[in-house]
Image (cartoon, rainbow, N blue to C red):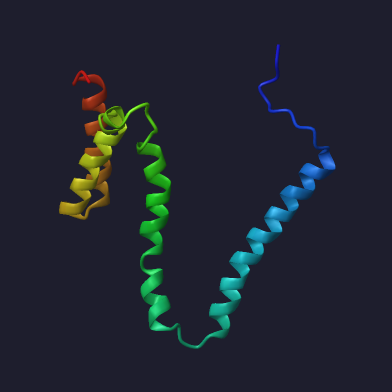
Length: 119
């Protein structure tokens, strides 16, 4: 019987060294922005304009891989239940600009497509 935990050839010290290094790098990146904006009196308008798109970009990076799956063919990808429900949710978001309505309609669309409509 194989262990459900992935085995590696690296020792515990190496694994912990990588975890600590990644943690320090992540903290450094976040701290650099806090330090930078603490020492800048006024944020340049171009930076302010670019920062407006960060939430949408982060949300897209989180949502798109969950609804778009790589199927054997393009037709199967475009008819996947999660993709179709995501399209419906995107249309609701576009027209209503309401997060609650988008989530509820997206969930309802996924449920209907998955359990009621034979695909």
